[in-house]
Length: 57
Image (cartoon, rainbow, N blue to C red; front, side, top):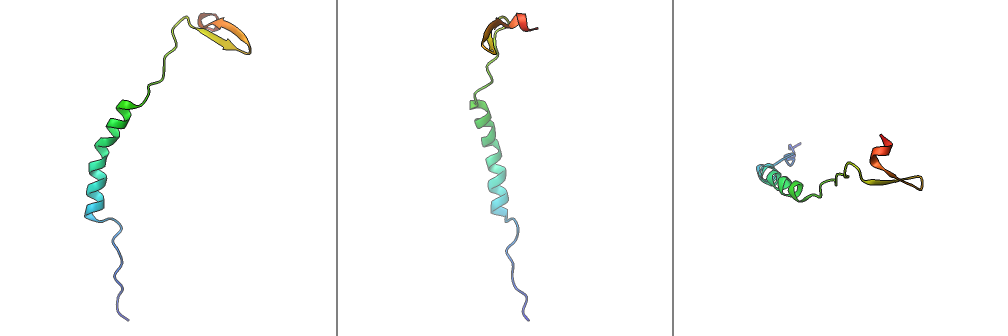
């Protein structure tokens, strides 16, 4: 029985493409919307009540 040729798990081209795409993630992270920080004394609604954030602490 002749040995069968199997495809390699990762070719050089695949590894190179993966390495070159890594810096692109930094571009996506830079354009991601940052979480908005609430002002220290902002208004918050809790169970239908409108309270100052300082009243919750």
